[in-house]
Image (cartoon, rainbow, N blue to C red):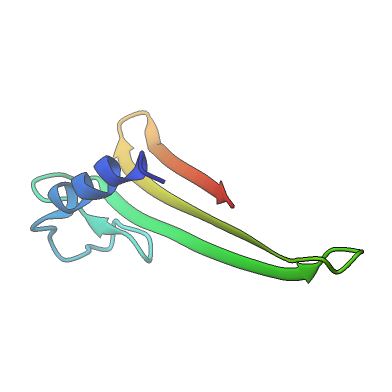
Length: 95
């Protein structure tokens, strides 16, 4: 998950001052400032904890897991047709 921090910190600079979404952008997208490109940032976080005992009941065990995903989708209409770029970063941590 530490690798996602530089990407996450750059996202506000990419969409800072984004203009109001024009009809050219699909729902959920925002127009980038001084550009005709549309961008959408999405993601998810999941956390689990499993508590159980060993077969001999000598000790209880706790297992944790966390995962997350950040995705940036950029779309732009070009003279050759639509152009789409997707960047996705995913991380999993188990204890």
